[in-house]
Image (cartoon, rainbow over all chains, first blue to last red):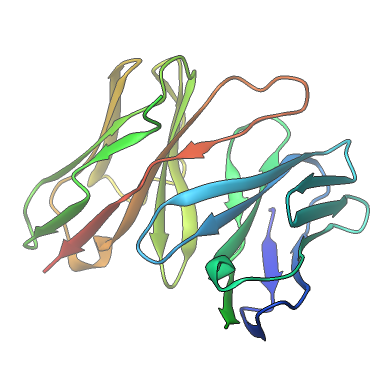
Length: 112
Length: 116
């Protein structure tokens, strides 16, 4: 059974810092991995999707990496801003279904 | 495109009442998913459809929960009778068929359900 874990559960940093959010999964037979952002009381916004054959994806200040063999992904946020404050969720999909298995999320606070 | 549309956005009801949540997927998407988010269990898949046919309903918690997709542009999730432990945020998501290693889901804004 696939399990997804995110560490840390919460993170508070001053504005301008570079930071890394971690995601680990137990079954390496994934189709792809998605990172989402969720603002309080809002829905999920897809940030990055990494195919199982890829090592990383970049979008602006965000960079996500994937190491399937070790069951790990990281989301790197460069030069953090207060507007980055949100909960970040990692989710993996298995090979033959569209079912997304989510981690519990990392709640990020960037202080001005 | 307006994205995935869900209604209502908020629902407050009393225990024992029937609750119906609605979802309109992105036009042209083949797959529709219903998820539930709670503090204790996080986000969990309840059921998903492919071309309006339920494929996996193993996440539906009890017989009190039922979901339908009568056509490609509309789905409902019904709870009857509702209980306080059903209080959660219910998300609908849709996607195209997987292709080239990409199976990306797009989420609606969710329905926050409170059962008193």
